[in-house]
Length: 223
Length: 210
Image (cartoon, rainbow over all chains, first blue to last red):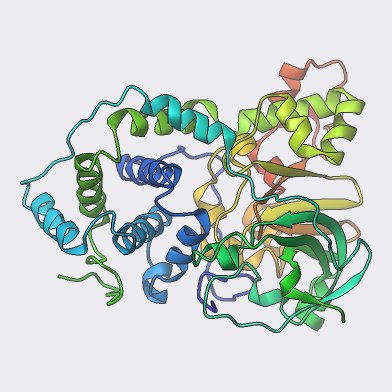
């Protein structure tokens, strides 16, 4: 979808606030939200692609004015309600109880849970699905399609219609555009495509710069 | 009650994230979908075990062992896995080597993709709109203005936008004057920023880095 999350090349976003070091989590809220997302995703309540798309579906002003872990919380609320894990009335009611000091988070022990989460974190969940039959090869010139799907895509707007060079063929990978909408994995060849700065930004490009983006085959065509 | 940025499509009010997180957590615990043990384990893993010290170990090995360096650049996933690092947000990892001619820097313009097993969770600035928007369009200026890093005009800048599940990491150049240092000593010179590509180590001596 064409949304504010697709930030590459947007001007006027302010200064980069670089910090040489910072805590992994700044507070209990960040810990709580991070852990809840990791556990609910490990339990397959939703996929990573659905999760990213749920963040993208936040209202634009809200997205830009909220913190990173607020994005995570918003996406988790959306998906757990949509998938019937929690009910929206139930969630609103519980929220009022928390605000009134009438509800707290209970402790619950589960001796197997720690080991299960460690195993999930260590194994990951890769998207490679075999070599496939790629239509393009290394060194070939390709053009990114002019595409504007309403749903999820990992084709950033700033590379669309630009010409680049295939520098690596990654084999087939799960297509996020499909899995974000529960339409299966639909694996497709994935390519690392290199764009000269000028191919993306024209005369406003900085000299001697290039951007490499991983793009699925259906995003590309011959020039 | 709604927040400053009402979202009519969202199932709950959009303000007060702290209370919303507690409300959701209490429901998930009641439904036996979440336990204290699971939460504590996940938080502890990323606070204690998964962080940039892992990537620093990879870099130090590559600086010390030319065969490992070659393997790392050829098959990053396998070479990094050999040191025990893999998992969520890093099942496939590619490593891009900085040289005097090329400087590499990583970003995720669409969200916040970052190689967790070797660098840990990303810093706030990496996940925020200014960095994500600027570094693909004006990398040289962004590195200079935000990170005080002047990349010479004749050094090419290669930006890696992490749009798939393949994760990228930068192999910084080995600083001068580090001959004879052990891998453990070398690893201490490797910074998180140098593996993102917003800092260059090659032009600095070991004394400057210490």
